[in-house]
Length: 367
Image (cartoon, helix red, strand yellow):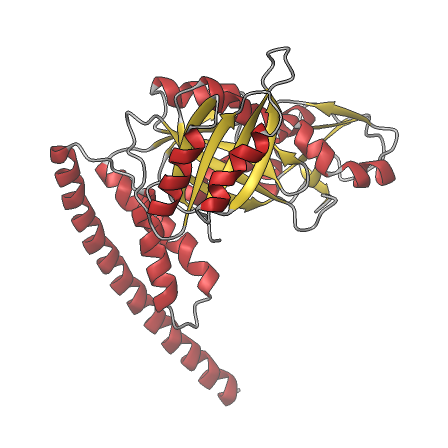
């Protein structure tokens, strides 16, 4: 009994230390917020952008390098993103468009990149995300561009051709798909609803466990969850967050065929409203080009990259829809477009392209 009382006294003492540290942290955070307000006032006076992705990336990288534990290194980025998000909100509201409704992976990507102190602008389609950011209804858009299992998100790539938006950042999200339903059972499921990419990423599991169920594509996984909440015979493939949002059971967790399944999202903005990020030291450059339909044209397009020692990390083709068997090529390069070797390669590349559009140069997601 005495030993138990001693243990409780020790626990109480530790809790008191934590409470005191929490108050110290709160005081420091408010001091940081006050300085952020001063920064915001200077930015408004100078007409500078409130959000600078390269600056936030550098801050987080520096803190991760300085971290000596026991706080896990992977915990630093999400903690400071929330701190910076709350401080940024004191400067100006940040409106972020993404594929909705609530509970989509696009929403999770937006919150993970910008923090939760944002004005959410959920959209019914990827097209609407581009329209919102182009028209000024949102400051930024978050759009999926590729998945580690299913490859590129074709609609996002096509829209880069027809809008003025540029990429100012990226984020990568581990995608864990769950089968959601109003009833906690697999029996009686008539149809499974999800975005076409979600259905494709769970093809093997669905074939084995629900071979008779219709696979019904919808505009987003969260929209599938919303519809499944209205009908006992429907199930949805979506995030656990979507399940909580619509009051659904997780009938089967983690049903994606690839356990390492990830989706990469681009952060897009109008160049007239958001300046291009300067080099941060860990950058990617994205562009879309086309070349004349003549022998050796694709080879000639790649030669400038080799000559200037620029590595290509992605090369995708999309039909130009001209009826002439012509293609657009989407390319990701290591490095920033303003770095001398990358700039030289791009200048030379322009000379052999029939079409050239720089989509953006931005800090890479190192998490």
